Image (cartoon, rainbow, N blue to C red; front, side, top):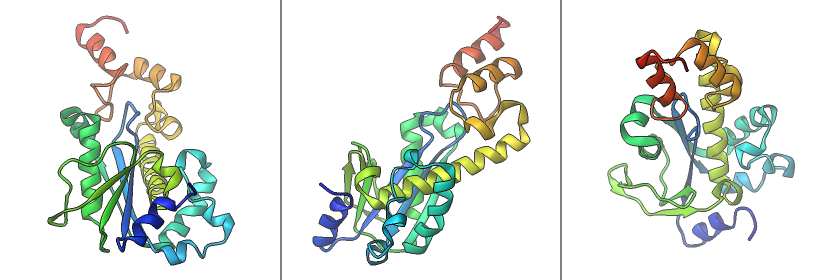
Length: 221
């Protein structure tokens, strides 16, 4: 299988796909962010190889590469949208539930029509009523590698979430959000132990959960 083949198969059936992905599920602070992207495939496949190769899993790109490819994605997208699941929603619904809420939000913000939702991973979105109608879905394992629309969504979600966390770091400088963007690095955990848990930390996630319990009981962490 080659990159783009899942989308080519959908297009050959006369359907038009949207790709969706998330960023931030494994963090201990901050929202989970999703993006949905509908690509113009004529424009996509007309890109120079150098640009086309950059539309891939956001985790394989440097910050500089992501910065270069974001305007390319905007230029070849029929429509794109970003949404988030808040820390409160993560605590109430769990990370998977909050992720699905954010996915439905991003899909409902799209302005162009689509026939099939292509979701990164091995699960589809529960209750996929988008724009008032139940929409077919396809889960694509390693979708951010095989599908250009999912890869584009992963990049836009990553850039949006990282920007938010950097801005949060400006207002809460002692936590280093601009460096770890909410992941449980040693620096982050050390800062948590020193300065305490904020409203942006996910209290159901370890080690935040244990730190909260220690602070409540007065035990040293």
